Length: 177
Image (tube, rainbow, N blue to C red; front, side, top):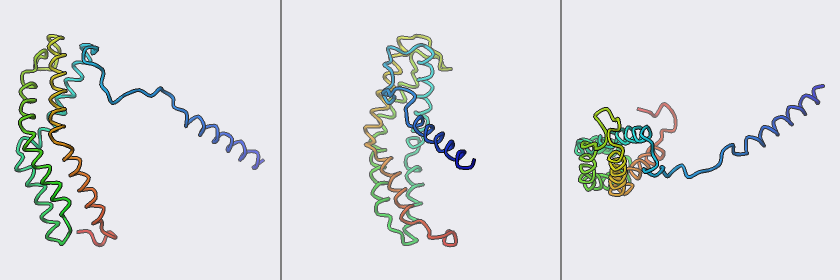
């Protein structure tokens, strides 16, 4: 009886694995957003809200770049005082700082478009569909300009920090402090 039950379970698991490996939906180009011309009013409002959240999130670095950089620099300095090799981190931070300062005009220009919010009211509701479409498109292009001007330096800084942490991971919990 035990053998029969284990054979049934193995067959069930094999069938389950086969079905789990088959994709349920078709693959689509999810990375590309739909053209602005095809968005409904509701979708425009959702896109606008998402764009505002992204703008606020990236704005934290642009609000006071000196303080933002100083915060990271102080952490690097503390690690250097402990005798850690921070050359890769320092180089990534320097590149990020240069890109941040160079991207400020593009960010400010994007802020002007968002402040004008043509086609949207103060609550993010569409008031003029054509203007809203144009604004969403302009914000998308502005965000791409900021991203391009940053040149991937934030990602490089994050990767350098990750590599630094991995290289300087304590061997056990007693070494932490």
